[in-house]
Amino acid sequence: MANLNTRRVNIAFAKNPQLNITIADCTKDGFRLTPAGQPSKPIELGTKIIAALANYVMYTVSVTLSKTEAKSFAFWQQMQLDCDIGNFEVTDSSTLYTPVRFKNGMITSLPDFNNPADAANADFTIGITAQIDTNTGA
Image (cartoon, rainbow, N blue to C red; front, side, top):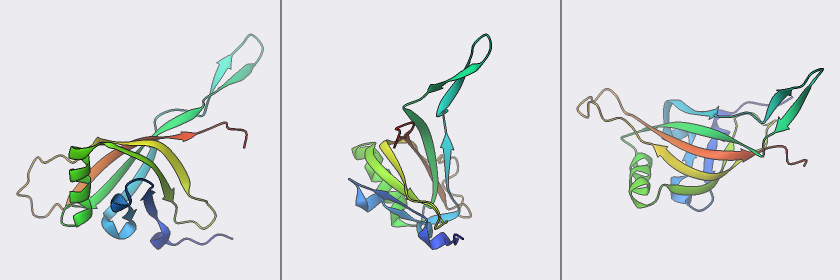
């Protein structure tokens, strides 16, 4: 049986370790991984379906940091320097899963500053887009 431990949850960046994120860097919203594609697509034929296999699936990783913490400022500086943040791994809270490896990561969205005077809202949500290789036969 697997165990759940939210303290295991983290994102580790290979070429930018100063951007590594632990659950302690996040607000209660933490982060979310959302696919923007399919690992396979059914193709309809006359009497059956076949699979068109994708080489990768693009994902968006939304991370909600606190704008009062240095990590949010590190991402703000990184966006100004270079949005290409390279490969990274996401570790789940379940001990059953191995870290998920993402390739070609890039910062694709930064927080909305509609009301910078809103002291009650510390959310600093960033979007990172990357790919997971699929159908590798491994």
